Length: 183
Ligand code: ACO
Image 1 (cartoon, protein in one colour):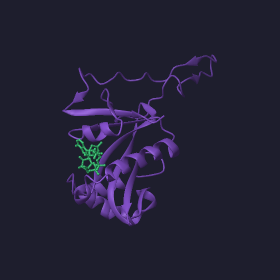
Image 2 (cartoon, helix red, strand yellow; image 1 turned 135 degrees about the vertical axis):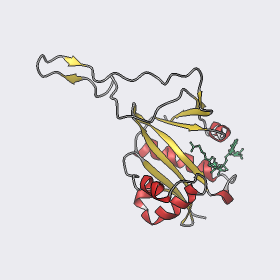
Image 3 (cartoon, protein in one colour; image 1 turned 120 degrees about the vertical axis):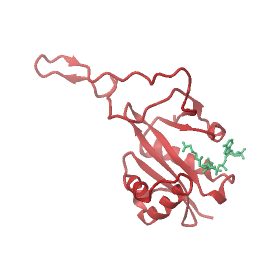
Image 4 (cartoon, helix red, strand yellow; image 1 turned 90 degrees about the vertical axis):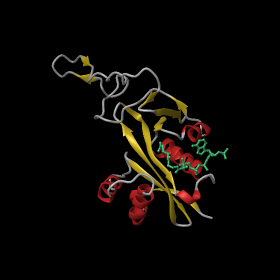
């Protein structure tokens, strides 16, 4: 059995079957789903697919987190219905972590789940505060927001980092947010 995990945008012949695989779990219009999958690229967002003997059996999407440039948010993790509970989801997640660590050079993976906490716990994910994947990139003080003001040659701060989402615990809308450090 040959098992590989590859980027969807480099294997476009699987676009339609990938759409069906995801829509079989989370129904959405084919047009909207295809538009989302077509966004996959070498930089985030990236859709990774799992192939077993050249048949697509799994998918996940790595999305950017505007406030954290060295992290990503994993979404839409799915294994074909008839093949669950055989370790394929574990392999898919482990290969995705390798891809994030080695190719994208990311340090942390975040995700949210409602019901699959046990699966991610076994993979080393722990509960964390909710994180927003909306908005545009906000540079951090430690990276590229130190700008030189050409008039007075003083260093000035960029836009402030938005405050954490106002929640009292780690569950929002019944979702559990989880994270894993890749180092
Ligand atoms: N709760 C507790 N343990 C679980 C769960 C769960 N919900 N799901 C799997 N496990 C365990 C398995 O029993 C197994 O344990 P073992 O190593 O002791 O035998 C271990 O986790 C690994 O299981 P796999 O066989 O690798 O998982 P699988 O191939 O079934 O893939 C997946 C897991 C992706 C969650 C699959 O069941 C699926 O596609 N589910 C439907 C879609 C879904 O809910 N996706 C997750 C959405 S959340 C997100 O995308 C961030």
